[in-house]
Image 1 (cartoon, rainbow, N blue to C red):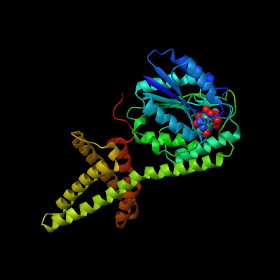
Image 2 (cartoon, rainbow, N blue to C red; image 1 turned 180 degrees about the vertical axis):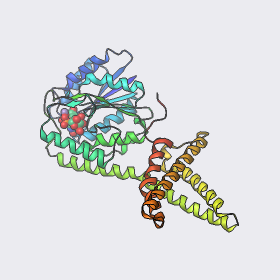
Image 3 (spheres, protein in one colour; image 1 turned 30 degrees about the vertical axis):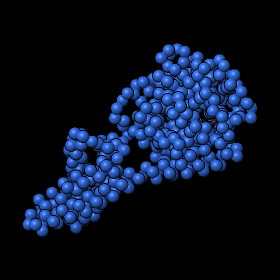
Image 4 (cartoon, helix red, strand yellow; image 1 turned 90 degrees about the vertical axis):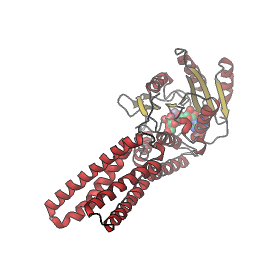
Length: 380
Ligand code: GDD
Ligand code: MN
């Protein structure tokens, strides 16, 4: 297994050497792993690059990418692309140079990859994970970006820790499906954006608890400096764009629903005009609407998770069963509504049932059970 460790650096001369040593030292315990270190340095004024060049004499598997100062996001984007396209790695592990995320934990991340997960995030927010030595400013910062923006605004729920760098990502059918060249994040919003892009590939996510420690040597680059405001605005912008992108499938689903209703009405009317009794006409119309909803959702709304072949038939039966659930919901709500408020309230009870319950219910069932948008089909 080829593992590419990506280390972005800006003024890390005191840490980078020790970090490289540590990665290879741990790697020696696992003879089947080929470890490759990619350092992406923004031509640090402290000459971090010179240290890396020295280490290249000690180890053969070190790559140094030098570029101008642009920010963490750009450095990571370049490192990821290099790992996928040039190195052709099987797994990519980004980490910081400063030992806040302990490299000792990387075999645990790989362990989860071998279990079949595609994205394994080192996390401070699962049981057993924590951060030590944070001041109130740092904590507030983290809570706003992680909880408020990433979780609620962007709606990225695959993991609970969105901000850190340390993770293991499978390349085949996962990272290689992400359009890295299109990601324009300059700053730390890259971390949230890449999680979102990975979620769109259908990747299976998990988190591993770790302790986020204090920086070993040198100073933090992320904090109240001249890039800070730019990075915060970029983070807010990314969160909103992710939310809009997410709602696209809901929008398509709504269009499909309305089209279904039109088809049902048209077919029912046609059949009635041809002399068929209304009950049968409407039933046929409804079934045609279900069929059109199913096909349109399959080839349009959920086209990234398209069902094909013999499974299409099996799933169509499942889809019909789900539609039956919607019928039951409406029946129960209309029954309750009319019992409480009187028969003339049947229409508003039905509208309530459709908009408040049936639409979210169906959307949930489709995502979860029919097209399984959160679960990856094949494991290893
Ligand atoms: N090439 C490059 N260019 N590297 C950078 C830049 C940059 O502009 N800015 C920071 N880095 C490198 C640092 O040298 C370090 O190796 C790593 O990125 C993390 O930066 P720190 O200075 O240690 O910042 P932090 O401790 O606040 O970072 C935390 O938040 C980040 C963003 O959410 C950690 O949780 C990181 O893992 C996380 O990416
Ligand atoms: Mn740090």
